[in-house]
Length: 171
Image (tube, rainbow, N blue to C red):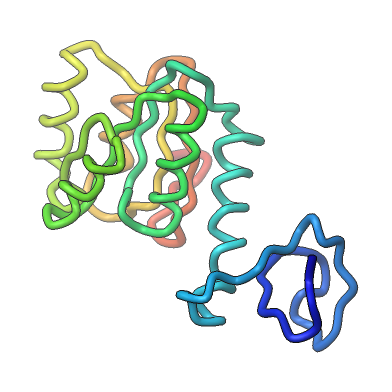
């Protein structure tokens, strides 16, 4: 399947070493259209989504998921995953990326730049008592975390993958 000199991407232990031995199940040919740097990010993005939505959340058919930063790498991969399992997808993104996300089959897209507009848009589409089952959050600005928690059902799951503005357990 692989030849000496093939450009491959994958995940595994000791990936930062010069030479490793790896199970080929964890490897894939790097698409020619990607640079090595771009290819190196793909396994991390897909593993992040697999861990978050499959292992931690157990996203199921018919559930509603809110994916913040839907046009980013993790967001796009999360959309693919959610659509594959049959979830209803709500996403945030900048205005310029809304049509792109709709073309990917996202059920509803709203802003990632104005928290109060985001909340109003979500209330309009969900109804006054409507909720989502899962929030995949990576936004740390404004009121997105508390507003997203307000939209979460009482049995919902909130997954934080952001690096900044992460709430403490007490919060």
